[in-house]
Length: 186
Ligand code: SF4
Ligand code: SF4
Ligand code: SF4
Image (cartoon, rainbow, N blue to C red; front, side):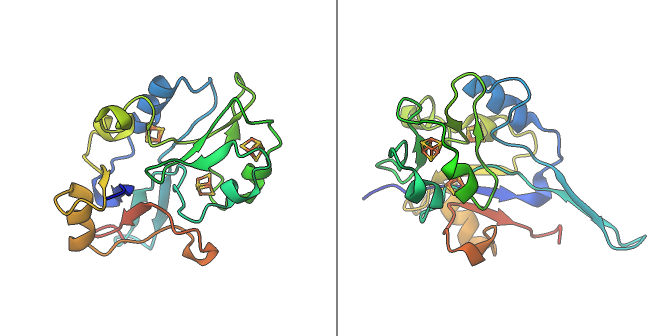
């Protein structure tokens, strides 16, 4: 059966340390001042003593129905055999159509390569070799889970069976493969 790789983010476990952000930059040689992922604070909301604040990891949402793939004139943006959205930097002409089309502001032009760049689920150097993505392996709080949703024994399947999860901006019809669990923080 084909794999369906997903990331599940448990907001209640994220302490906002940005270890994921740093690990991602090292693993993927992201240029200075550019980022494939960040985990900014959301809030504080409410009034004392009922104040809430949590952190929400931002990156490519690995859309099944990906506008970035649809608009790319050179097919540099594509879904691979495991449903992961990737960019072939050799085919990218830097037109930025994908950046405009992405509802999640997940892409940027890599200052060193001149090609569109974004989270790759660490597919090429880690996941295809049987390893977890760098951000998942590094997460201090254990807030990030990654795996094949088609595997009934995977952590991600168990988490999504147990908890109510949300996707970002469902109104765009992009059908993300990144899920957020807000249990305990909202
Ligand atoms: S989040 Fe943006 S860059 Fe990532 S697959 Fe969706 S549309 Fe493409
Ligand atoms: S910037 Fe590159 S990946 Fe994005 S639409 Fe243009 S050619 Fe495709
Ligand atoms: S999966 Fe890899 S590329 Fe994506 S945010 Fe995590 S470390 Fe960065």
